[in-house]
Amino acid sequence: MNKQEYLKNTKDVIYLVYCALNERVPGRSRLEKTDLSGVYDIAQDHLLTAMCAMALESAGIKDDRFTQAMGKAIRKNAQLDIDRAQITKRLEQEKIWYMPLKGALLKDIYPRYGIFSADYLYLSEKVIPCMRHLDHSIHGSMRKNTVCRCWWYTAGAEL
Image (cartoon, rainbow, N blue to C red):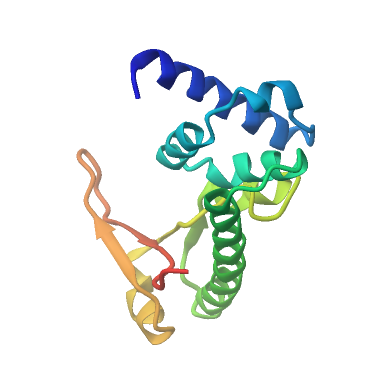
């Protein structure tokens, strides 16, 4: 994809995201000029495929890749909601500090379920035994100029 095609496809992604977030049906004339393959590639790179899929679906356009991405986003959101409820319940029982990242909270204000996906939950170091007890994977990293180690949870299974 050359620079001009990339720019056009990027503008199409932004347009589709706008339509999805504002619950508007994309214009048919614009969609006829849209390169769905290029839009898909850019949307994938920026984690916007589910939003674009929902906008395309509202206009009656079906594309297997977008449909699969939307289904995966919905399944992933459902699994993460279940996991997050289980984890936070256990953490609260153990009186362990945790903090959901903004995406875990913001996802609930989007117009459709699955349109936004949030994977992470920041945790204190005390959570390691609790998470292992619940059979969840945890990952850690030390950031420059920080005193504490950051731990986060991600969905373990590929959905």
